Length: 301
Image: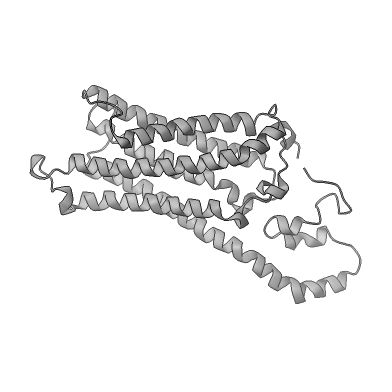
């Protein structure tokens, strides 16, 4: 919600500072008098200012594209590991069903979750109606949650079919905690930030909690994936007992799985870097611009 002032109704005086490339539209917001001095001033002074304003945007996209590349690398590595070295996929209670577990958990709890978390930081989303991006954020998180739940179903069904105990390891405790908190976070986010009946005071109060909880869930997800990869390698790389080289001999499967763990950690570090940089916050998410509008009002803006 914007306060009225002496500026043009189409944009406020602070528009060039609110979203990238906004200074290119300054002619539509400024005075209509003295056009020639304005042109001279743009050529003399605004170009260096524009370049300095573009620098953080270029840096952001460098990190963002690196995060996307790491996302693809994580998904490719876990799929190759499960298909080439673990035999592929099935849903019949065998070890092939278990192979769905790492693929779905890495894709859902880490890759989709991390990319959904940084969605609001993409400068192309600034200065636009926030509602479509809210819905896209919620949809990405919902898809991540669904994949995570299916991944849990795969491993529980595999354990039950093979008479293996459930939830006995630290890895399983961390994974269950991450998924449960994720489900609570998604439902709370839907109720507080999307439904029009939610009071603005509640949104302002819970916004920092929502952001903090989101980072905590991603940390738990990364910890669960790393511990799960390590646990799986200890189980399957036992040396002569199952015809494989031992884990401490670092066979190719261990190299790939360890590399997957490194990629997951690197992706998490990039996500946390983007989230921790206040210069890359969406302008209306900064404390000085904490003005929330209900869902139905955003549709008309």
